[in-house]
Length: 479
Ligand code: 5GP
Image (cartoon, rainbow, N blue to C red; front, side):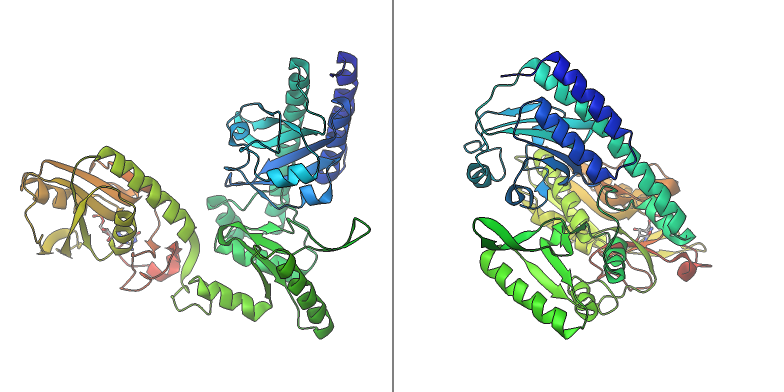
């Protein structure tokens, strides 16, 4: 089975016209999905957009797929046909048996046999996908693939235009401070719906943005009741927070609404025990943030933080990557990790737990003296000799490089077998002495950062994230 060149030509004409229409993103993509599926004589089509962190695929247009198949939630981009996101065309002959399909049991109940997927590429990078589904097992021709790739090219332009619109809208609406914030830490994907049903939802989203907690608005509906094989009742939670794997439904204090929501939630938990969902009013929400160490009710001090630079989850991911690299480089060897107290405690503790080679640990302490506070003095030296040992100096932050330079020359004098440096943060813009850094977590801007072990006047070390201190607080201090 396959379509003629004429069919594809007419379909592309229709799709190009829709792409250039004033329809909303969702309606445009639904219409393209329909034209694409029909032209390819397929049973369903789905257009997906990748979120800004490249972790989740969000459906922006569909045709011919049942609700159950569509509402199975945001797809994990790494698990869901990652080859497509690497720019490859993927063909799956039998979706019910293929291990690359994230929800094969749903494919089975929906009678889906074959899937053809192509990447939507923007500036050479995957920004989404288009998938075609057929009920009958199907082989796709080169003409089929080439047509689908052309549709993907049109979708790329649509996605980028939607992004541009969103940015312009944001720029218009937001004040100066917020604009500064969003430049340094881009808000989550623009393809997420931005018109909230209630102002409290927008407030909630803003708080999540401040803490860089990724969110999806109303990403999934859960069927709760069926009548005669059809869905009679659904429940759509307001938010999904992927990093916490948590659905959130916001409530007001109106008792009649609350009772109804509680009933739906009880039903949802019975039908979908694996789903983690919370009903939150404003106070509950603040308490939830506090549990993760954030927010005004949190034990950790957050006032004075201008913005979050790296979330706990981002730090953990990066530390794991660094640990994997170090373990590989030192495979078959023993390693001495040396840290300078106290800023390095969080990083050292997390890093060493992910190392798969034998390590020993030692710490030094230093103080600064001299007119400008830049002369270093060792106040606590190593417990054990490092002569002939492989040494990795673990640092929280390298700023001017003066401290590290001093410490490295001190350590080299003990003739270790090798001496390398791993720093979580590299404030390269302020470097005065060019010390070689072998492993770097993040390059940070020229701002004063705190949290995750780093302090300002002894405080903020216990924040689970790394944040930028409000410049007003450190005005006049020589930092
Ligand atoms: P150096 O300028 O010698 O490279 O860095 C000296 C020390 O200054 C670092 O080890 C760190 O303790 C401190 N430091 C530099 N930049 C920052 C910063 O942004 N935040 C915090 N908390 N400490 C910093």
